[in-house]
Image (cartoon, rainbow, N blue to C red; front, top):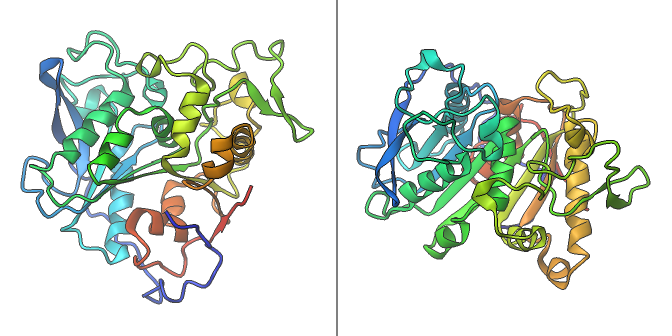
Length: 365
């Protein structure tokens, strides 16, 4: 993955004077995707939005873009926004599959997600298991669902031309995709099959730390005061009491593996409201900073801090990870992914970028 220089001129990349994103005429319909499970012959069904019939002919698909919704579980909105960007990008829809998983929550009884796994309202954002009594595989983690979707896509008998999978998430979806980038069990096997795998993490409320250290006001890293927040290092914020999906690896083992994965972190320069209505305000999240912007920059600095603790970190700690401020954007998924860097990450260097797209500033730590 090449370095980004997002403030350089985009005259070569901007192929149109201005792009007006098309208005969706009607709400998209979701599809029931059947995901097989080796330990359970029946498998399970899961709702997704997609621009191709997933039971149909997918032999022309070369790239898949998985776009993850936030805590409102509105996969339809994320799908519609991604499709508008795809249409504006100049890329052929015939070779790009846009897929928006929709994790059912307890309040979603009116969405007809019968006989499918159901999570607590925010449990899916951290990899929690589906709630009991849903008739699905016991202990099914939301992280495992993403594994199963990836394995479905990587099946050469189904998508023989597939070359790239992008996992992208914003807000609550950014939380899930960040933890998935760290914890998933399939990245290396997907790359071994010749697939380019990347993760785009935008504006999450919190991050997964590999050690008890947090950024102090002095600019140094040190263990946080447990008298202020006794559980600040528990999962989903740290390595203690790890979710079942990811048990068995140490924090530094996970960090070293994570270094080799292709991850770009985006944060809106205006995502600075400490009282935002869906901002995680728990003491464990507050230990990471007051706002999403602060938490992002603290975590980026933390990754570099860890890199200095080991030889591997010194040589390769920043190669596969990139950190980007999206200028003039707050907590807005369409503007984040519709920014200059967002379009490039999702649709490639040759994608058409509109004049109104937000600029991006690569952050060097």
